[in-house]
Image 1 (spheres, rainbow, N blue to C red):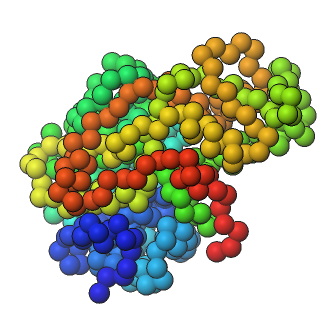
Image 2: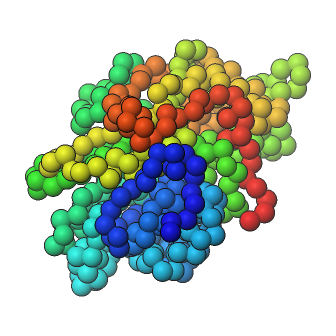
Length: 398
């Protein structure tokens, strides 16, 4: 009998139906999204070959922590030794850095390949992003080609491969890069996704590309568990604030304070901008429902995993201010003479600054179809109370 998972899963029915005893290869198993996928996969007896960076015993311990943080019951966590085999790999090396015999054994043993691993530094070094997000994808596609079972590939891309398209509706299809990119991360994910499209076309194979937006959870993370983007951002902002109040001054302009003593950070953006935020629990369930559909034929099929309503960036900024006392965020269209604190937020808190000018929306035909058929519930509103819960600091006890 499967363990009890989220009530929304039960309302929507079985999240992922595959033959009993099926095996998947999974990258990024200890990450934020993958832990929520495994929370729903393990109770249905799915076996997992987790392709990880850490030594296997450390990776399995991290996975157990991530699952508990995601809300997995004890019965699901106890399945890890029986159903998960961790294999240490180098994602960007030929054959994942494995001996040829082991590489082919894995390739011959899996019924599906899920590629969730990615380097998510928005302004990371281009070479490092390319190694992980492009070359890593290339090696995973090589794995999917090497075996005898011709497994389908499920690739986690991002809604932000739309790059510098600031307005309009982003379609659910392969994109061109005519608009350019706002960050090196976007470009690397775009190029990785393009490899998937080309591989599926050239090999007459089935691939599914999921493009999630910014995924959140109102669950308070356990220590050392993976956290979502905005929880990390709130921690960074608190650190920047402490440094500005008590650390040495840099050569640039001093941080501005208002009459209440709050530090003011000006962020470049548009007053009517919006950012797409979605609950990770809903995103994981939607992906698994879409993955369980019969193949639609060879080729790469794109699904935006996004909320139907963009969240105003002003609402996000208000929530960030409530979570970081003494910080005030101002959205401005021009910012002469940025302070050291503003430069630090631009460079290291790009999650708060890179997407403050977006007015675009995303086609979501795939999710709308699931909602019409009552296979998933429409995601709840991203309101101020939800954002306050999202930005709560991690719990202090495991």
